[in-house]
Length: 124
Image 1 (cartoon, rainbow, N blue to C red):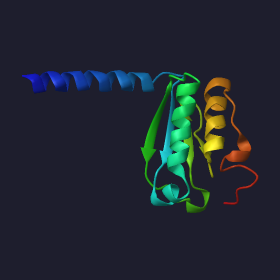
Image 2 (cartoon, helix red, strand yellow; image 1 turned 90 degrees about the vertical axis):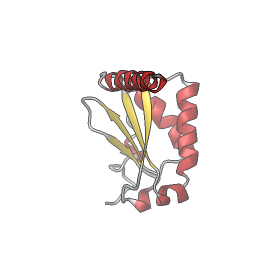
Image 3 (cartoon, one colour; image 1 turned 45 degrees about the vertical axis):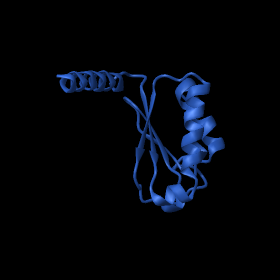
């Protein structure tokens, strides 16, 4: 019986989380964690993102860790997604950039274009 109660509690938490993802102001941060990203320092970027979220009291963000994106030369990659907007892909993200780009996007609705895949320093 206890296992079914645990299942229902887990199911309820998952459904509540999905409802939160549908809100207009909810932001998903995808951090690519492939081998190239790890070699480029993505673990420090992840830690900086988590610290920025805690330090700025940002509650409408979730971090999703994903695999290789195939842009090895541009790792670490971070993608910010918000309902109704095009995803923003930041490349060559450092911990210093991570501490800035998330609060700028979440709190001020700003995109730092120079740090994205569309930036002036990126040749695709």
